[in-house]
Image (cartoon, rainbow, N blue to C red):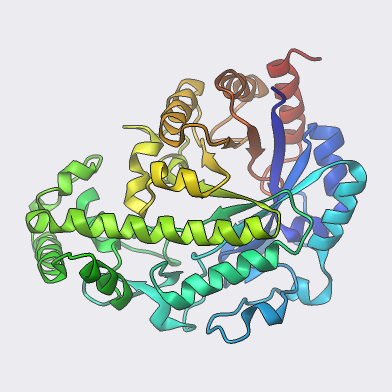
Length: 412
């Protein structure tokens, strides 16, 4: 089976270096067959080593990088924040046209609920058990958020893209929620998880309708967190398993988490239905591999698929409602990549699997390492490989990709 290949990119890469130049680099130098540009993205400050316009760029709030269709958001509370670039030119439409001429496909990388728009729609964001808001993240249980997600899918689907890769269409963890985060307490894995759970009015209402004793749940979670705040020895570290929470509030927390998973699955189903109506494949991205390996490339413990539940992601339930999964194998060792991919395949069954690899440190120090991971992907029947990320890596990484593809496929 032919292995589809692509590379993630930003609109700023395409605008700064030129659409045709970026596509030529990917197709001719790296040897990949498609591009996966961000149609929407969260706040960030990044270094772009080969961008001629700016080497360090700040995106202070989440934005979309295409001119939206206002009619799709009529009557909705939440609307897209449009980047300055998209107000000047539609570089993503240019990319779709130019890619088609080159025989390349475009996949629309779309960040949904990690919106990073503090001060906007403050009643739509997630809230912890103490009622404190997390302004970076829209809550998937909120009806206005769900309506916005559906509209955004329809908006992106107007473009000639082969698929929509949906990032952050789920709950978020405590970490990676805002700039300059500080935790000077030994919270431990268990308390960090509990402090990241959403207890907004809509999450609580959905749980109550499902028969969950939300008073018992919120009381138990508050008491446990307050113990950790008061006593460093109360923190519980180590890899958190679902079974570790089974007895909280007499099992009511476990029931609360089932409702949370239903919220995510139903939202994915709604989004996928909109995409299908427009003739677009809808691919769900599970970020658990990045949660484990992003910083060091050395994930440990159980497979990434075994921790998806912490984000409200039940892979077995989402599988039947989407067209495929995108998973992040941010790991230096090919054996770890195999371990994670096999676990995902076991969970998602027959759904096509796309794996994201980083052709650079900390995951990769040479093309031979990348080739070994590509060989694993081919052996396991993975449908596609996406390389992260065109703008972040040195251009020599494109040569590594070409060499690795040749080695993995027996060519060159």
